[in-house]
Length: 329
Image 1 (spheres, rainbow, N blue to C red):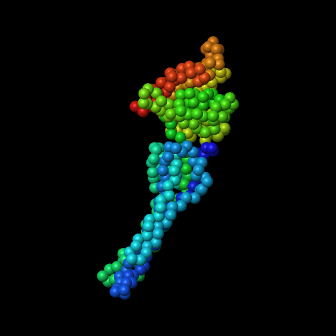
Image 2 (cartoon, helix red, strand yellow):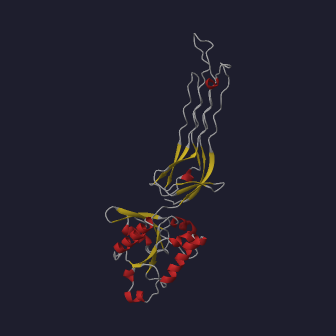
């Protein structure tokens, strides 16, 4: 399945049905009054957030979406039916903008949020509406109003409490697969993860938080290298940053500095988020070798092994504490 996190679509709400010009023609009322019915309202184009969706991949299959127009009014005061609404489902985290002005129209941050993107046109009045004392047989009616029409740009930014950040093959996918319900593709080569993976991590009895495994970053990611600028957008809404660094790295301190720099170049406000470091794969390195490495200062560091399970529970507790601290701030 392709992961698509931005696209442009065109939406058109339904036009209103036209009002009808008609007069009663009955056996005993040859010159009956006006009886033209009103036209029906055009259908709206409605966006609905759906937590079952994780990509915008279905939208490019049809760049144009159009709701049905209202039916025209009929004689004998029969009003036209309203046009059927057109519902477009989008993932939670989708931002909808006017593609011409780039102004944000709506930001879907919760499940089952609905928003009318384009309103259908009102139906026109039939001639029965225009009857007056001075004009008992009006021969006029309104056309239905046009439905709204927009070109929209959609951007998806995943919503998660915790964002995992690291270089390719640092062990992020293995970690999230061990502590959550996520089952990402895992291999021993870089860039296995090319899309954000979301997992729910449960702790205590009924508490949980959502963790996002962001595709591996490289130096220069904030400038677009390695698709980094596309990946970094998915870290913008997280509450907590977790840096996963391979304990076998030649310079753990430099790795942390590089990752942090890429994040801050992308969005400086990310520096305000609570953060910690998970040193991964400690089962593959001797303690004396690890002790000789220069480690970052002024940040909590937890040594873990996703393969043996060492310190995974402690890591989960520490992350949960940071999430709760953010929520209570």
